[in-house]
Length: 144
Image 1: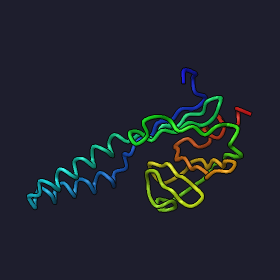
Image 2 (image 1 turned 135 degrees about the vertical axis):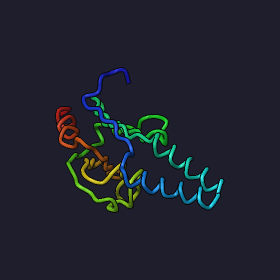
Image 3 (image 1 turned 90 degrees about the vertical axis):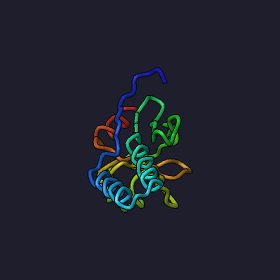
């Protein structure tokens, strides 16, 4: 963990449409005098504001942390990775944003757009959303 990563990226959930929906829910809770509704909206807003997707490429693999859900990094060991490629996906490709599971893929994303698909030997593929997918692929390819 002390080594300097070859690639580091931190993303946050800052899409305007999410905050517009939360603002609308806040206004509705205030208009309807729903203290419980307002409390729930504020808790959800605090959680969304604190979420960070941290991706690192180190000499021994790719590390992913979806904080505060993950308390530590999830490691994709270099010897289990069979391929890394840039990919594009829509908002509903994997069922939305966040950590998403499909029968053959686990996806970590904070927004729609581009990312990297990591194929692994005898395990589910992992899709990592990224604002810098070319740099992420390049850092991984530099490990060979």
